[in-house]
Image (tube, rainbow over all chains, first blue to last red; front, side, top):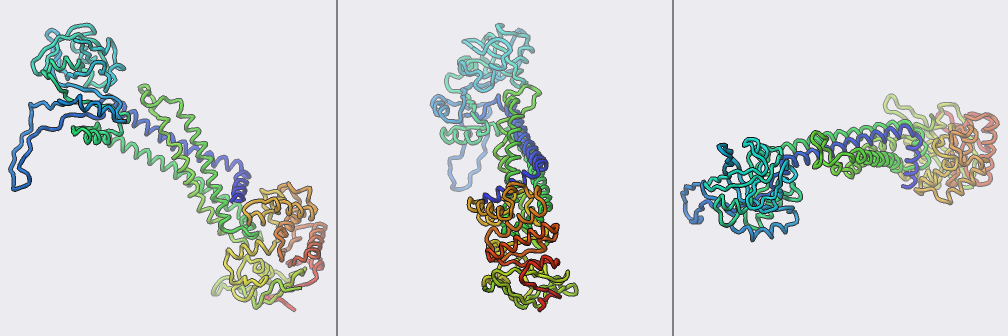
Length: 401
Length: 225
């Protein structure tokens, strides 16, 4: 086939302008493919980062303590079950499970939390808050409170509280000022505002207060145990799998972020489908472009093909020459398009660091190898029809011309 | 001399039903090794059809066609392609060189296409042939850069590349001036006598036919006389 390759390359080299245009066309198609992959992938990362980045990827809680029938399968049992409404489910043995969870390879960070509701009281003003008690130094383990801090610090000390900017504005308080935190168990503590953050989520900015676990124990009258363990994963897309694994290894209830975010996932799936459709059109354009150019070449080279056949070239050899041309065009166009795509996308910051309003393209998700492979396969496919047409050229019909 | 090609009761028809045209009507012909023959006849007599059948580019509708003892009428396409490559050379009126290839590459083609690559021995043989036809200094010229006579000499060298037993030439000088035509015929005559290659030359030109030792006249699809 070395000789077939030589002829294919000679043919491509003989019409430099046409070949260059053809390869440029393929490269543009590949560029579109790569850009769409990077854009759709980047958009998904950006959306997930913005919506899921500051929440727990897996939440571990104690299993339900609802009543169950102990009568087994014998006979009919009529059971009226009322779910507990005032009973708190507590992880009493969190300390035992924590090393096991932290040792899992996909786990990036964990945070033991005591959560409950209460009020921030400042003079006559009262504002409802969700109180989260966290371990010292772990305020930012799940949501990046440190990164969103607009004043003060996240060091809580013995009597510090970190609150959102909305809440601070509502109550007219700033860092260093004293507030009273009252829990729904009617326990009250006087705390100093250590820091104010602004994440951009109203639920956190206006309704969240972070205190130490010790403060939360006092407020919610919990001498031991925690409400839950929040987990941040290295890959948030692995949440379902990791939740199942954690649940299997600990016997606890592990809930991935995907539960309760079905609409977001549907949106991302629809977005990915749209991207795939555009990429498919780009590939179809490449196939049609290569097929039409090679068909034209077949027609133009009919006399030469006829002579080759007369001189002893088999039909398979002729097919090989044209399929090799298609392969070279696809491969070259693919490599050039992928190279240009990488160069064009490289200056963009990754979506995790994209500035507000910036284009969230992700250079890592360009699918360069897939683009090259699919384009080469597409070009080979596109060359089969012209190659078969070339192999069918009757030497007798062209010799007299 | 031994029998190289034998055709008996060769019939070739084109089209079907009312459109059917019978071009060869029971043609008989024998070619012996080392012959230099002219194939003569008016237009439409069936010369070109006979030449393409002898060159295995076309199959007869019926009749016997053997060469070197091989029944070519019954052979499959792939077998005919290989047989043609090894045993038959062609020289056409319009030379039909590959335009993107040099004279040397054109001459090498029949060997390279079968071997799958241009071997050193093929390169040597092609260079010798080009020297033989007086084109040693034009070896690396692209085909379009050669004159009409030079192109036809390259075509003759290409036809001889695989040392075929039979060379079929269809009006090989039809597109050349008188001097070039005489040179080409002199070359064919030399090769025929030195290498015993059988030449069958289709022509309308009595001057060309005069170079040949045998005249075969085709009329109405049969060989006369």
